[in-house]
Length: 468
Ligand SMILES: C[S@@+](CC[C@H](N)C(=O)[O-])C[C@H]1O[C@@H](n2cnc3c(N)ncnc32)[C@H](O)[C@@H]1O
Ligand code: SF4
Image (cartoon, rainbow, N blue to C red; front, side, top):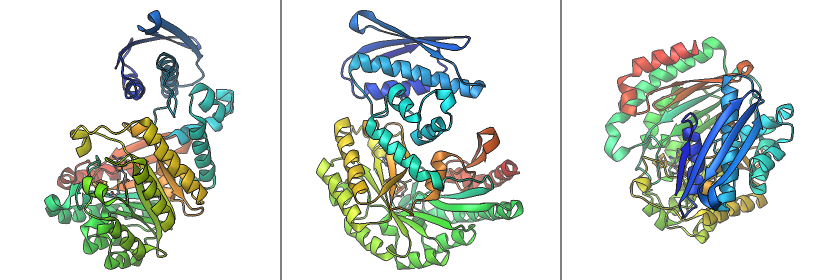
């Protein structure tokens, strides 16, 4: 365990995240003390430890950032570089993403590429030399940035719409999202649909009064299709449309012929049918009530009618490398247009976390994720968006793969944060992107569906004020 102290608590949360990554791979005790100071033009960090006869090392970084916000970002980065450098020397551990702890490495890579004068070298060199990101991960990031280039939003007037539906047939063991299991919370569906319909009417008025061009609509969850054909039909009839129109669906046991016909009647053109794994024993263990054969049936219903995504998760409880490999191989043979490979993360609120489940180590996670990358790349899929979550097995990532030309714009927009998103429903966060200020402002609805329902008038007036 690392006993970490710092002269100032200003950046404590971010630094602890990096410390935790080393901690999860360390089985001995280590004291680490960090202090820092600012002088004109320079940021100085000193790291001390009780190891190696009182290790002490000082780092001096030239300050380049202008403005308070950018300065803080830069200082945090310097601190992480100094801590990472010291810890990897003291422990012999190197992390796949080096000192990077953020959710969006591709966004950072693109930002550095666009500002070579500030960094004084290419983004690749910054990632490899300064951040110690592994060659394999740099290759992944570079491929994603390349695929995204022609797909990134280029107009501030083009926006996305996100609608959240917080219901699911049952709650999966690893899930920490806002999602109410229908067996216990069915009574909330009708009032929720009523409130959401009101909010969607307001969103439609906003779009027409401001002449907004909707680039993509994404109905996410939860499991949007779990509320049944009639309820979802009502929501979709109030929804704006767009050339890209996604319903996340997900659970194959919520997809049947009537559902698909209804979705097609609203011009929905993308859907998720999520196996997570094709192993029935694992599906039972994680509390998904469907079986592998339900995935084949649901996929047969949608194939050729819409662009299909399949989510898989590496490192599910009880799964060995061969189980995950088999799932990747089957998904690949089915050949949906998109396959998204997640690595298990365990956050507060999930049953696995509450039960104290400890996943297997970094090597296995890495082997699984590398296999998926190699197999899907060989089959013609290209990685096109990625994000990292806290508490992920092996400190790895989630990657969306697509057959060329089938990338989901909404997924790119949300990760690269260069598009305004008008969001509706519980847990929804509207984001306003102002390119000239390089600024995102947010307006969040209440997270819990019951609170959202009870306070719908407040939600509507807050969102209306936000978009004025
Ligand atoms: C918000 S969920 C919605 C999808 C849909 N409800 C379903 O489960 O099929 C999106 C995806 O996140 C992934 N996911 C959720 N919790 C996860 C966790 N703890 N670790 C890794 N991936 C996770 C799953 O692959 C899931 O399909
Ligand atoms: S993983 Fe999907 S289906 Fe499972 S509880 Fe979470 S949102 Fe619902």
